[in-house]
Length: 471
Ligand code: GLN
Image (cartoon, rainbow, N blue to C red):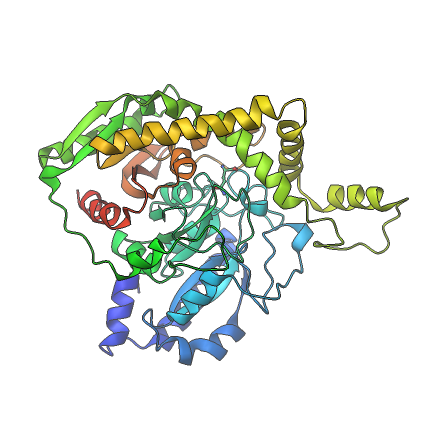
């Protein structure tokens, strides 16, 4: 069985598929494959039993989908794959989880991620790494790697994830599936553990662009519990899929994306796609967008500042695992010891960065300057969108690498977000779609194309995604 979400919904609707059989198949397969890839940390068989009958009446018909462990789920552990939250059960569920439930989505389990969604290639997860289904011993991409693996290895029909600089799009790309991050204000973040609040957004992993559209429509919407939520999100729910006249499209290809670090084989595939688009009379033009080069320094100034603030609540008293036998002199030493003990190395590294960029000596130079450059980037990207419909590029500079190969050089890893981070900084929607396979050390690895659109232009992005998918 290899189903798309669309095929599942249609099959259950016309009685040609039995939901229970499909779900049993996927749960069994996910459990088997888990021993190879280590993708799902907790299966929720009891949840399936209790809820399937109700969920299959919803629009998604009880479709088996998986969930990142930083979405709060009442009654079930939400650990963010940190020792700090090993046994944490939230008193309420994230709005987007509840919305999906209302639409008939069935959670089969929760899975691996980098600790608190930061890091490199699932190597920072407290519960062990996840492997890419392509190649041997390769990373699946970072933060959300495991759910990309679950979708790519056909253990579920889709997944819900968060994307702060690329965490939906890069793992999707490394595992050869579709990853989509919507406009910042489109999906409620209430009940989603924040990494960097002004950049985080909930996104979807699916096998096709059409499935991404279905899943996003089942999770988006205005939510008064999220102060950043926008009523325009409800307009998307009732909008009809857009018909694009490809001949009228204008696409910007910033020359900055052909930076030094880009694997020449990815560049070649991307240029092939550009030629295919031009053959459809699509107007693809090279443009200059120098502000893109500031994306990484900007992200690594703003993100740690927000992340450090968000992690401050985990101290073993307000939130986080306690240790009653821990010897300590006073409250400060208890905080210090508990945070040293339960946070992993990457979390500690980023807390240090946070203290650095927010310290009185550096605040203006790093944090405030980054805010100003963010404004500049938004203006420059908006100017491009006055003339062009999409901005095109690769998703990452290289194909999936071998586990631990790059972990000694975190700075090098940080540079990997270059192509995707501007969508988070500007708040617009972006998508990654597979564009072909590359031979890398005798293994065929997926390569991908990335495109972003102006804020709230999801329908247009999906329509274009379908064009690119069929090239
Ligand atoms: N590379 C990003 C980081 O480590 C991943 C963040 C994300 O999108 N969750 O900060």
